[in-house]
Amino acid sequence: MGALSDQLLVVTIFCYVLAMMASAIEYAFGGRSLVARVATRAAVPVGAGVGAGGSLPPADLPEIPATSSEVPAETPERSVGARRAGVAAVVLTVLGFAAHLAAVVARGIAAERAPWGNMYEFVMTATLVGVTAWLVVLVKWTSLRHLGVFVTLSAAVLLSIAGMTLYVAEGPLVPALHSYWLVIHVGAASIASGIFLVGFVTAAMHLIRSGHEAGKTRFPYSLGERLPQADALERVTFRIHAFSFPIWTFGVIAGAIWAEAAWGRYWNWDPKEVWSFIAWVVYACYLHARSTPSVSRRLTSWIAVIGWATMLVNLFGVNLVASGLHSYAGV
Image (cartoon, rainbow, N blue to C red; front, side):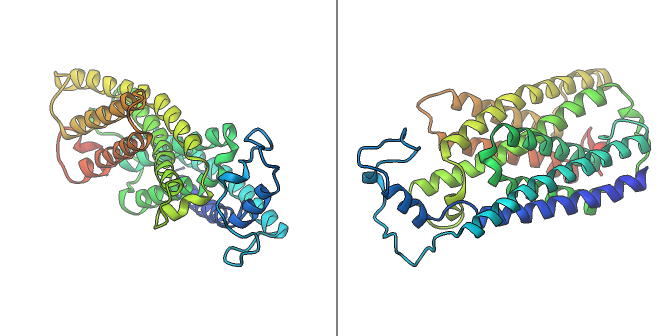
């Protein structure tokens, strides 16, 4: 079962990479070009508002000639091909998810315990939750399908790092981890981490899209032309973080209870505890800023991005660099 899990992980990464490539094709060639959009909008009668087919009145359009050759209008064949690539990306993501789930289950069966007893298994589980969250988002908001290129890229990179640098053979846990709190505490942390991953992607894309809408053309804002509207991205970002923050809070509290049972104190100033709390504070600041009307949405998205950075420090920096009471949870 351990060898099967390893092979399924390779299949998972392969599927996610193919899904990323297919999403990139749809991202690059899908939708209508700027000239095609302008030409379509120019046909809207004067005075027609957003309610008339969802188009803005011609007075709000940039003055770009419909015959311009700088941005060629998209052909129907090109549009159909891009849509097929988008559908293929979703199918490949689902196949990768199935292989990913089977790899995690096989790992748990081989180890005869919950499959998140070390960094390798934690990354496997967290990315599985992240892809699950992405599929849920995709079902609810199909217009966000373009973001699949960034979600599958993140999952493939994290799983590749886990397989190449964090891998350890399945085996029994050290005595300190023989507790039902492993399932509760680490399980909650992995679930929240996976959902925060998707929230990071939508927050970063919101920053890119809003910068593009503000007239910025340099990289990475040049990527924002084909992204969903900034307001939609920001709302999804908030909903994801509002859902995952209580799970992370529960995980931190469960960890404190486990620490008291194992070490005699709820708080030990261990690096893992400190950075878990820092991440909690950053995400709490995000939710507070998001509920404050005077705070710009760009600033709140930056806070969400910083929150994910603290999660990466907590996962990789603390476990690989610092030493403390959680050192046995490393590779």
